[in-house]
Each structure stands twice: as structure tokens, then as C-alpha cells.
Length: 404
Ligand code: AMP
Ligand code: MG
Image (cartoon, rainbow, N blue to C red):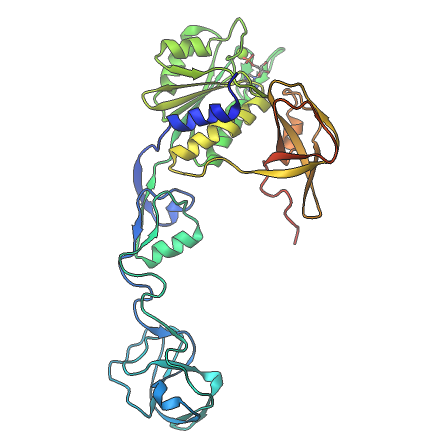
């Protein structure tokens, strides 16, 4: 049977970025750059002062002495006349260095004397000057395509004069729930029915990953309805179905997708939860058929769908890294499948210890809420002792964060 790593590789090899759009600078936050950003000018554009003080001719100041102050220049100001030997100009941080000057003396190293300034320390040529192009040179690639835009990238883009930024498009992700037992949230309940919560958990997961969810509703357990609603789902950039993908008598998802021309790449993975997960492609678009148990749905989204959506948004790094966790209690499992075990974490010493967040049955949603991380327990090991180190995927960003 396929390992989850092989299944994920197959998915990532199948999907590609959706296309490119130009968005306003601030709208590019969290998106992925679709083109290299090349500096249109030098940064800084001119030599300028790194301190409030005096711009001087350094050759005048090899030892302490007085200079005549012939003017003052503030940030944004310009002096074009050349400063000659024996003279100084009062200068503010960020102001352009006047022609003729080659050093700045911080105000703390001077004494003001009416029209003169006394320089207390010897001056080194170039001191306290930020030189033209020392940060960025005209024509340099400052941000490569494929970079995720964060505040530092926004700062660089703004400094390069970019009002608009080319980024990969946000994928529109259709979500279809299947099952006769489902009722929509807000509709009256009756015996045997359950709320279509997966539509919302999937929509939330899509949104959290940066995609745009489209909730299609519920397809009842008959082929006609599956067909009609799946044709709708196949119009989106990616399509996720929930439930109806195991071996039950009323499980039509895989058959109908195949009828609609979806090429099934796999339909079973050696993992728990999430074994009956199917993946297919049609016209370059991925179709994920996730198992219906809410926990299985979320785990398989995390392992398969999230990385795929990130890749579709142009990201290169799409798989969350695992961290090392020391088990605080023993864990047993069957061999033959990787098992994802919901853990609560505790910061202890340099790292984390983890213990089960409770009942690991896929029908138990509460222990998913209580989980900080998911241990990834290898297929062929059945017993893990307290003190063993295991790999875990962090699920809560605030796990281990401090209160201040
Ligand atoms: P199935 O694979 O169709 O047998 O579904 C497995 C189980 O997942 C069902 O028995 C339901 O308890 C649960 N389930 C299926 N669809 C949903 C849904 N949309 N929201 C919440 N739970 C669901
Ligand atoms: Mg069903």
C-alpha cells in the first residue's frame, strides 16, 4: 500500500500554480511572488548621513579643532554648493551628504561655538555615511520569484516603488459533502441525522491555507445527484469531496468521478486516520476525495490538501516540518500503517514532551481540538515507551508560546 509520503509526492508532482495576477502592495501580504523583483534604483539612492551631527572634510579633522559652520541640512534637504576645507555643515540623519564632505561627526563628539563647531575626536574618512547602493544596487534581484510576501518583503517592494505586485492567483476550491445522513447547519435535526460540519471545517482549512472555499452543499447518496454536483465542483481550480469514499453500499464518489473523466491516481493510503483517501486529476486540476469522519477529513486535509493548495499558490516549501517530541507516556499501535496520534504538548527543558490528548478514535472530535500536535508514528513499530523520541507535526501555532 502507498505510504503517505509517496501519496503526497504524487499529488505535489501533479499540481501546478494556478496563474498570475497583479494585486495592490498590501494585498500581496501572504501571497507568493510570481516574478523576480529587480531593483529599479540604488538603495540608498545617495550617500546620506547615518547620524545627527556635522558633515565635514575628513582631512581637516585628523586631530581635534574647530570648523566654520556654513549651513544646515535636514532629511530631505539638498545642498549643491561644494563644501571647502575648514568648513562644516550641520546635518540630520538621512540628509544627503553635501558635495566635498566625506565624513559625519556625531553631535555628541562636538561642541557648538557660535558660528563654529569644535570637533573633539579624530575623524575617519567615510564614518557615519550610508553609501549609495550599499543596501541594494540598481538591477539587482532583491526578491526571487517563489518568495512568500511578509512585512520585510513589503518594505522592500515599497522601497522599490512597487504599487502593484505580481503574485500567484488564489485557487478557488469547491467543497462537496456526500451522505443521506447529513443536514445543513441551521436546518431542523431528526433521528439518525448529523450536521454537515465537514463543509465548514474544510472551508475553514481552505481559507487558512490561503485558498477561496466554495461550499457546494450536500450530494445525497445517489449517482444522479453526485453527478450533477460533481460537474459543478470540477469547474473550480481544485475539488474536495467528503465521505462516500470507503467500501459502503452507498459510496459513489469514486465511481462517479471516474465517469466524469477524473483519472484516479490512488484510493488507499497506509495511514490511520485517513486510509480511504482518493486522489485524481482532470484537466490539470486536482480532486481530493477525503474520508467523512471529521477527524479523518481534517488529518487528510493537513497531510495532502494543504501542501497541494500551497503549491498551487506558487509556494516552494509546502510541507510543515516535524519536530522532535519526547513521549511522556507509552503508546501502542498496530503495524502496517503510519498512525497520526493527537498529542498535547508541554514545554520541558529545551524541548517538548507529549502525551495523548485522549481517545484516538476517528469519531472523537474533541481530542482533535485538544491536540497541539500530531505524532507521526512509523508503520512498522507497534510500541513506543515513555521517553522515546517521536516526530510530530505542530498543529497549533501558539503551542509553547509564552504569556509574556
Ligand atoms: P462515509 O465514508 O460516507 O461512510 O462517512 C463516514 C462517516 O463520516 C459518517 O458515518 C459520518 O458520521 C461522518 N460524516 C460524513 N460526512 C460528514 C459531514 N459532511 N460532516 C460531518 N460528518 C460527516
Ligand atoms: Mg456516506
